[in-house]
Image (cartoon, rainbow, N blue to C red):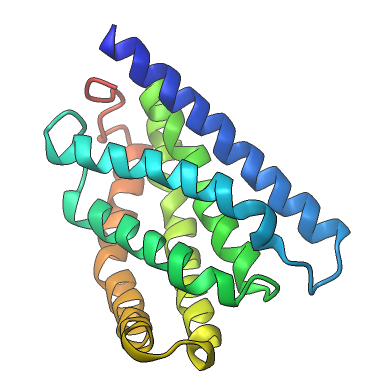
Length: 195
């Protein structure tokens, strides 16, 4: 019963992230550059990210496998960007680029947990080769743009986070590439742990 619950939740999250990606693309394509995308994307993004945080907790508890340090770091950064940065860059090009990087990452990740198999493994491990650097860079860009609007602790946190994004991307990127190549060659496991 628990396994079915997680499969249903993962399926809903998958559809949710795909819908968010479609919304971002349509809104960005049809609207003027100054459109406040964040106003319509805020609630779905927060709900979908909350599901990702639950998955990181499940990883911590041993129900899912993965790089816990990277998972915690990614989702801490996303929460920080959601709460402190995106409200200040809602009509800036960095906003849709950040959200699209997150959405594409998740759309490519969820089939691994829902279906398993070699193809899903390849997509899961190869997509971050593009989306990790893209997301890290665009998050840092959004932070730079938002700095004039931040004060006190948030200003210091954003400044530190810019350096963390750049250094973290450089530090983790070789491992992400290694995992992607391993998945393509058939070395990365094609089955998810528990679901």
